[in-house]
Length: 109
Image 1 (cartoon, rainbow, N blue to C red):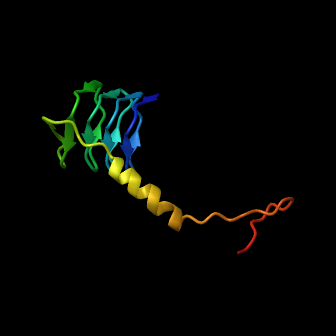
Image 2 (cartoon, helix red, strand yellow):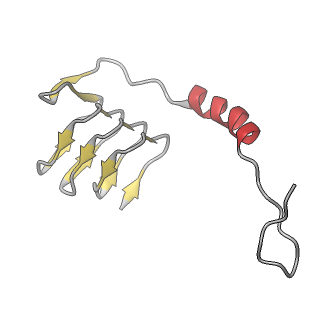
């Protein structure tokens, strides 16, 4: 499996694709099959399924209940704002418990 950079895999999506390019978004509950090659800049919409044996053209958007397709004229924006936001927010809500040496149970704070 080969996965490029700046891809976003949202909650509940399934990707079995053996090759995924850069800057793709696979939205919630979307499924990408094993025989699909996802090029760069593609968006697979929520609940869409792509199981055909094909190479998805760059900047393709798959959307809607019928999994319609269209090609964007511009490349999608990278998800850097979302990543910056998560890097700032997540440490505030993810509390690590320290362990005491020689004891396998976490220390209470």
